[in-house]
Length: 256
Image (cartoon, rainbow, N blue to C red; front, side, top):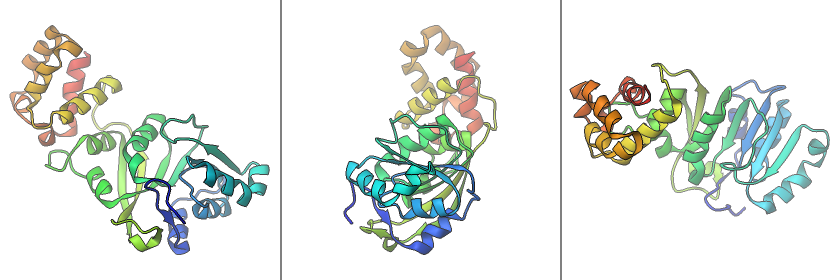
């Protein structure tokens, strides 16, 4: 089987069953992204889920339509052809997906914005490691801060390249993600997202330097007020040295 772009298809039925059994999905609406030839789709349906599968490759959509014609007819499977980062999605409760590596970041952010009960997602291991990086450490970045602000993430298990066709050059990791309310109050989610992005875009700069560069966005008077009210230790830090509470403090100062 030839991968579409950077998609690697699961082929080991034992691993597929292990993934599908992490959560009780009977009678639940499950979003699947990048179903490929349907090996996970089949197991999700067998577990009693109502499945919404989003696939970009029109050729794969044709094959899936033939393989699951009866399930499509009875409403237990809905196929959507399109880019999962952009295409409108019907309501769903749970996400289970072997994500193409290239959309790991944008689809994760989109899912967090939409909301869901739980997600079992496969990522490149290096990407999963960055997701789990602790705020206040050198490996911390926008991904880890945003994910850990709005969700709990746990590593389920790693997958060897041989579990896929074609085998990728790297290991993969299955992650369990559950949305949660932020640990620290955030007054304006959009401002929070903006400031986290801006800080890590300039990750070699101090917080104070980045804030001064944002005078055109937030207004000179607002920036001066925020700088005067923030702890000097926060102002002199780079973003990877900050904790979730620090990001919330900066954001709330900007949105007040």
